[in-house]
Amino acid sequence: MSTTAAAPSSQLSRAETLYLSGLALVCVAVLVRTFEGEGEPLIASLALSGFAFAASYAMIRWLGPAFIHAGLKGRDLSKLNNSHYLPECMGAICATVYILTIIVFIPFPFYKDIVVATSGGGNRDVVMNVEFVQKGRLLHKFPHNKLASFLSAIISLQSITLLGISDDLFDIRWRHKFFIPAFASIPLLVIYFVDFGVTSIVLPTFLQPYVGQELFDLGILYYGYMSAFCIFSPNSINILAGINGIEVSQSVVIALLIAFNDVLYLVTPYPHPATDSHLFSLYFLLPFLGVSLPLLVHNWYPARVFVGDTYCYFAGMVFVVVSILGHFSKTLILLLVPQIFNFVYSAPQLFGLVPCPRHRLPHFNARTGLLEPSVTKWEKDRQPRHPVIAHVLRLLAKLKLLRVKEDEQGRFEETSNFTLLNLWLVWRGPMREDALATEITLLQAALGLFGLFVRHRLALLIFKEDNLSFIGGVV
Ligand code: UD1
Ligand code: MG
Image (tube, rainbow, N blue to C red; front, side, top):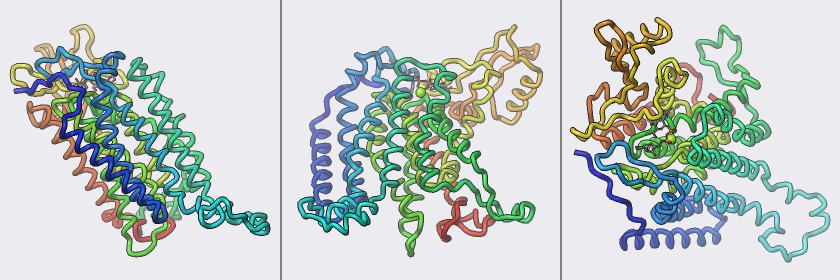
């Protein structure tokens, strides 16, 4: 039977208050201690992420009623008793805490540079030697490019958060919001161009004899590809949605997998040229996990809050930011296989070949308490526009990639909605909402781990080297 979500309480329990205050205090203490050394950015990032966890957790709870009052609310469509509203758009809290955390973090990775730039000991009172200042050596040492990476990331993330909040408020049409993430990516692309600029890809060894070179330069197309990725990533998370917890759990898994990949570059037995960009990625992923985990706690079955489009867009953009500025945008593709599949599979409905209802989330059977594939109904006089579409639908049904119901005259009555969640239910049969979320999350983790394995091990079958073990190329 389905569990009915209780009306959410906005108060923290005594135990929660105790744990969160304890965590926040420990994090502040660790943060203060980092100043005794050289800023220790990774430790500072961990401490700030812990603080962000506590802040998001408490604010998700406290601000729920205010969001409902402001009209940001939704009904849980897969529950027996769904008469009460849950706060929607809680991702706005996470995105805000996240952006502020990154802003507070900025001085830490530059601590050494700031100290050096102020006459050697961080002491601004010491008068600097004239010849020294004229040479300008010390001031030029400040890594403005690194600072620019942080600032461009913040601009992109703020823009996408603005889009998400607007979408949650006004339900903006697809055609109006489609290109906005691409505009939001411009600061990232400028920094990529100035700071790295690599637009060539390593060709698989079997293609090299035909092309006559090892690298193939995509030039401006590479920037087009990165912009397209900015549009794809946030939207792909938003459409793999509709059951409690799934938006956040897939994002947490992707973030953990990218972080795992980053750590591989930090523990190489020799200094690796990509260490800095992977550290940059970790600085953005740790606070992301910090704000996402409390949201997951509240959004997991039975959900007490909804994450809103804000969270989906924001999460997708975090992945784009770290992968573009960390120079591993192709590796990210391997971690988004379920999202890519869901998008390609959804295409017939997204592009209007098959009717697309406002909600495609699985159907809740109130009698059994289980989820079943939701369906699109076909009117007798509004059958597929072209016979090819009808053939494809029947072929998909034969391949067990769709559930189709036809009448005696061979007219379509209903087809299951084209989403990965519905397809999983076609394959696995009716199941509880939390079981479906768990299985899809595990699928995401398993495919992602396999993707990384392919990236670092099987790639050696078609590339000469993996860039974990060689210097200067991008696979
Ligand atoms: C996307 C999907 C839509 C899906 C919706 C669910 C596409 C093109 N769009 O639309 O098919 O139905 O996400 O998020 O694929 N809700 C629940 N339980 C949940 C999560 C959401 O009942 O676990 C409902 C709530 O009523 C909530 C609403 O979905 O208020 C949020 O939908 P919204 O995010 O606005 O939908 P879209 O992103 O436009
Ligand atoms: Mg949504």
